[in-house]
Image 1 (cartoon, helix red, strand yellow):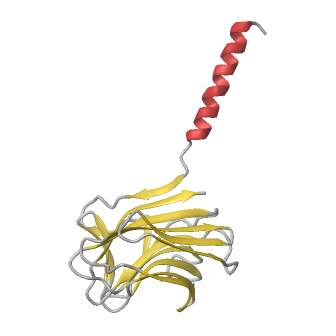
Image 2: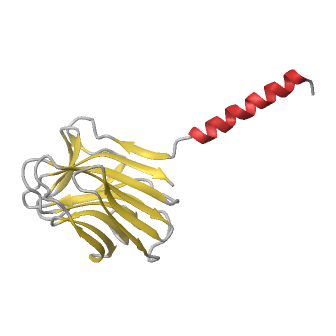
Length: 208
């Protein structure tokens, strides 16, 4: 091979190596910046009437009435992944619940899933089994007053489950090893309270 061909081959190899290093791990992003109304066809809404999950003011809003509504992203995932969302409090102090869900075995109900997020002023990691939940960890948070904004991250890496708040008013981590559920499953959001001041923004799902 002559020197020019060697240089050309080297440059092509560098190009593909660079592309591989910068390849996005993103599976799905949603900034919810669209017209007020239904969340869209990327999700299945789980909300016994008259509760619902809507887009309002460029954010996803669980319209609580008789039960906590949820949305589950379609299709199910088949890998280990990290899901994160910004939870914003607006309108008053929030004492209800708001979760990001992972590994749900169904998209018509949050079933057999891990749930990470707010619960009565604490960061809580739950394992949901049918209609009941087991608390795997809990950390008391600063009050969730109007204007509070936390980035909540739920990572499912085989049997290592990491629930954390990053870069907001609260910064906390719950880490457990739990082999109850297999890889993959549906990602979702769930929340609400009698006086609901909870909004979700900037959902991101990434491969590990």
